[in-house]
View (cartoon, rainbow, N blue to C red):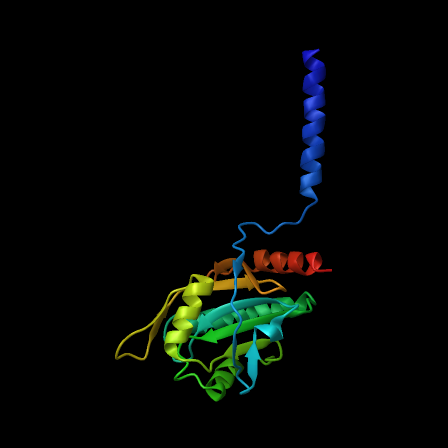
Length: 196
């Protein structure tokens, strides 16, 4: 009788594991809400959360005068953009918020973007707010640290990429320096499939 129960238990376990294996779920989800926003993109046009509705997007925080992490982070975003294009993934956007908005005008952001990508159709560089606003916005929505250093031209900030779903929920964060490209692409694909 004990052998019978063991066999039944093993069969149930196998069925349970096989049914779970078929589900595609993003690991370590944050599920943070993101407040509405409307700023200015690199073309001088109003651009906000409503323009990203129905899209999966990756966000980061950079500034053009940065002499440390921002150029490699932006180069990594450009590589991610190429991989997204190569995979033929539609309804995916990239968003880079400037953490130095008083310096980063739309024209400067457009020139900066052109150093890294020839395709600015699905990559939006945002400005058009005051320093205090972006610091508070990043802290309250992304749990992300930004601080303009008094009397200097540099801004202290974290180095994360953020995955946002079609409804505008912050789903996950990743390292923007040592980027897990395959994981990000897989997570994007899961969100796109789940929205069909």
